[in-house]
Image (cartoon, rainbow, N blue to C red; front, side):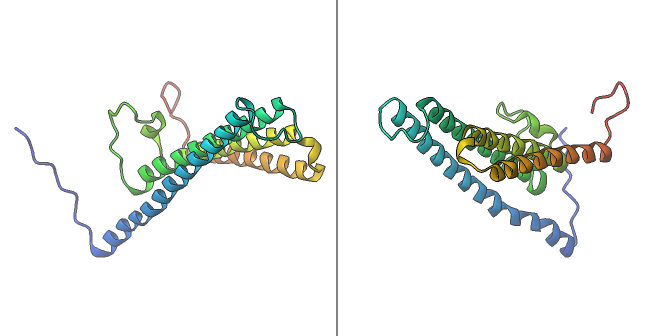
Length: 187
């Protein structure tokens, strides 16, 4: 015999208003989806430029050899993809963590990481994604080292190291705040 589902407890007006205020984040996540669409357009433009300049013979040579230009363009494409991945983590993970459940359990396309996402996990994932994006920028800087001042290169390197140190600190704080289960258990 099926039992009717228990209804959630009724909240007083002020707690209800405070709890419902989480929905104010919805326009922010929708705005990030628009930003993601803009990144798709940017990716397609850069991809077309790569195809046009290498396969169709269009576009100028620029100050670099064709191989270096291809490498810089591909690094730009990777950068757009990594930023887009970061947007997906923020949109999906943030909505799931702070607004409402997506109810994707059992869906074949459910991201693996979503099943154990919380604010701490999301912060560490975001920090490592930012390090990846910064690494792409740093690699492009090293390729263009001849046209940049040592001061610019030093600041970019220090900024990257700051991202790395921050990510390690976030992970350590998360580890301290939520230590893994005792030996034999799984964290």
